[in-house]
Length: 337
Image (cartoon, rainbow, N blue to C red):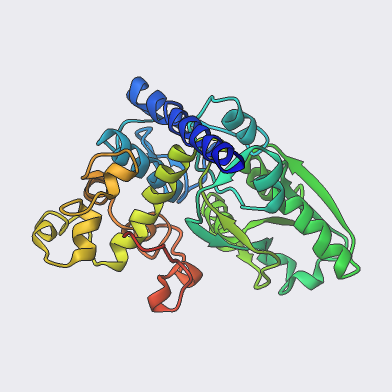
């Protein structure tokens, strides 16, 4: 009897889980667009260009999901959100996915009803200072006033770092990164702190980018990635594997330019990625060409990195930890098999 009860409970769980996919996936298909939460404007990660087209590494994650689900990377509605607004917008259903330079932490993972779908950029917190201050190390910042964005992990990291090094500071908080850099440029603070990637993005917004420098210290781990609501495993898998598809494509040498010719490949791994064999798409409740659509329309992870934040971009950030695991970095995706 106990065994039968366990079987019935398992069957109920599977049934409930199967019904759950009629949530976000069906909503996105019904709406004909993906609602993606992004920053209010962070060059290289999520920012509109002069024509109003959203571009960036986080933006490309959204486009990848849209390509996988809708077959069209352009079917995305971008919703600009401040750091304080982002989680509420996701929890309430205002957006389908959050892709906004957001750090994966245990508190966010366990108490907000959210799931992180992976890491699309490995980062760490740093400091931006005016060169005329003559400061060469963060350990010289005792008594400094610090511009910081409210509602971010950088606030706690900053307090921990200064307390740990027996230093004092005065926090000057702003709601958006744009306000933060304007406060820094206006001289309302001595130093600006944020993820190092964001510091490079903010520095190019200064009237004279060469007037400021990023200090060498990295004081935290900041794994940044897309976020979804808990309780919808089908959608969680789709977002997670859409991002992994970008990385796997680079591992396999698949690019937006050669993906059509690679459909003829006899490599079983490439066949699974492009949907010419296997049932990966079916298992994800997507079409067989879901990953092909991502690679064709968005490119692979290396292409996205290079054009948005890499040496071909205005930010000129080295791959570093974000290089593939086969090339000395830690960017890694589970096998698609």
